[in-house]
Image (tube, rainbow, N blue to C red; front, side, top):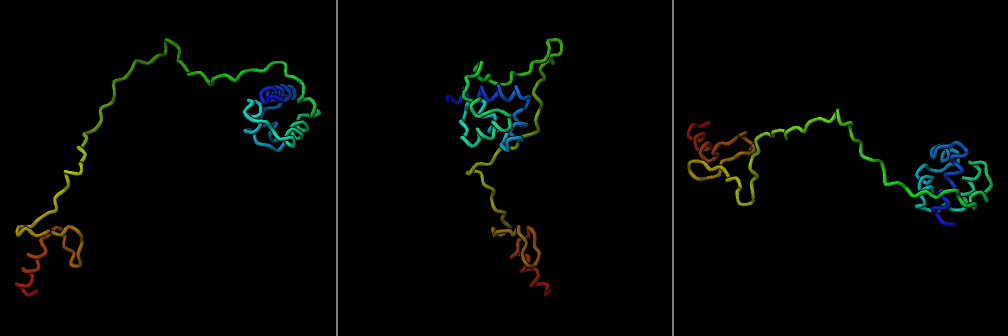
Length: 147
């Protein structure tokens, strides 16, 4: 049997029993997604699943062999929600954003900080806790003071 014909017949039998897809799935011990995909004709169920569906619907398995009254094509989906003409809001101008900083490329790297003597000034913590101090000059000063 064609999967779309089976799906249409399944939907007819389900609606005749007054069940939703979720209720039928729970009653048969299946997932709602499986029932939905069978009704849409995306997949064909295994025979064991057909038996479970028939028991849940209270029909014989041969009920699925009958041709459905109407095979419906699936609709494209939910239409967009359009507000009534009197409630249409005027378009707002785009919001102003904050100041943007220029991005630094590979050519614009930060230069490492240099002291008066051209040596590197430490920025990270060292064991003496120096922050941004020219360590050579500081150490020389400490040595002269006899600390």
